[in-house]
Length: 343
Image (cartoon, rainbow, N blue to C red; front, side, top):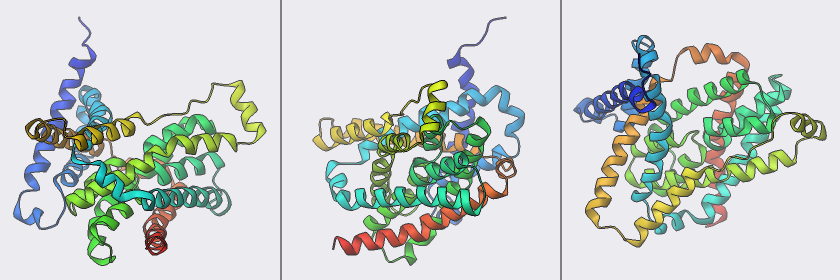
């Protein structure tokens, strides 16, 4: 019997995420669904969640490779191609306001996570820092990148990722409902969303549910936040205690993860800003990007299991919920304060 290649093994999962993506995009065009204001990407991830907690477990063995490829490689490719929707003029419009907001959000959220996690919720420092990094910067990617710095066990990483999935998904549905009530312009709301929602994919989905302007600004702000991951890890590594450094030296070396997809996103934005490509290829790339992002959303939904809530336990969920409340309320206060400061 021949062993299927990686590309062959991915096809069943890719067909499944493709079918769910098509279903979500079609449902989003139905009048009643369209009036909710949620984008096709949001509806697609909802379809994925429903499938992931019903029939998907029976198909998981045959479709896992393609589903994971969708939520990993296709998602990052979609983020890179999203650069063709952005210009440097839009990036410049975010400016120092966006950088200051992201810096404050990351600093306050991570510090709050460590203090509350270890002192109020009696969690260990590793779990607190993993949940804090995921909430403060870029979700599961930040959790995975922080793991080698803090030398956390695998089950702590899984718990932190589960909390990011739960509250990041909640944010994706909550933020479009908040927009009419917070007194922010589309640009300001985009900065607010990009600086406080957990995952890049969730930022895109939430932004698209409000407007293209909100989505573009939110993605730029989120990319600035993602690119702060490397300096954050360097600072975290430098501030570890001598005991921690000795323990790390005895084991595997620490690897600082560079978010290359964020760098490539900026590169595609540069190409788009210089107008090197005719409009037809750019429109084709934007259309392909929508398909890739929708398939990525389906993959994320399929891997979002209700069992993750039980796996996380109560104390990590309480910490993550507190950080989520801070990101929404405290993040809003920080955004308003920076707006007033730079006015």
